[in-house]
Length: 270
Ligand code: HPA
Image (cartoon, rainbow, N blue to C red; front, side, top):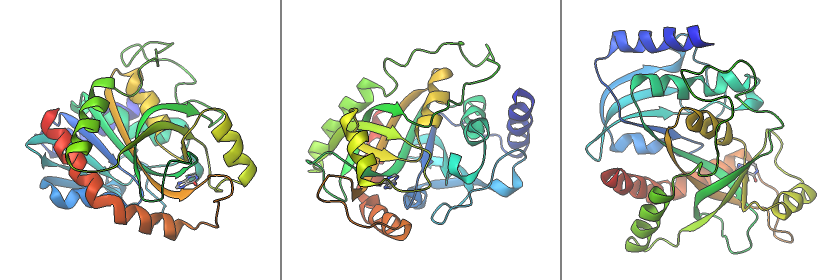
């Protein structure tokens, strides 16, 4: 794994002389932030050695280097999910590579189902903690001390200072921003009503199929993390309706402009 990470990093560094400071992972229907970037270089995932390829509709599959809000960023337009059949190490390899390219902060976005009755479809939720329900962990296996410790602390997985800044910015922007705990599950099935109930009862406000592996690996390497979720459907008992991936994409796309604006403003303060 270490060799692969080094090989991929060197491949990218041979193509571009640009050191990003901040990484951004763009989730389902949220790839549009890229249109706001001053793009300096773009590589397709399929052209990057050892990179998996996104197999999911709504995930583009481009690694994009450039400037956003005057910050040097690298954006992953499309991510990898455990349900696609890749290993936990494979889906998080890009995060390792971004760190080796120079980032020290990571912004993650996703779409999720909301179980908190105060949430409405289309809301933005700043993730202030997570519950790993994948039943596995990307750090299982040999630990590479050069990346981080065997037993990483997770007491502040999502940076409190960035959360505070983002909440302040959202208020200024008149966005009714929510905050909460994100439960990460494997998918690809959406939850049954009993599962939504269960996940709510253990303390989660939203549930989705990504982010947790990426943030675990990022925190292992001591990257500062900020994550935000678009609530695309309701997992509130009594309000659960049938949901499709197309609807998740549509709702995420509708909320994307306000999320993009918030991330841009946050970048200015990072
Ligand atoms: N459950 C899991 N993942 C999701 C959901 C959901 O309800 N909505 C969007 N991604």
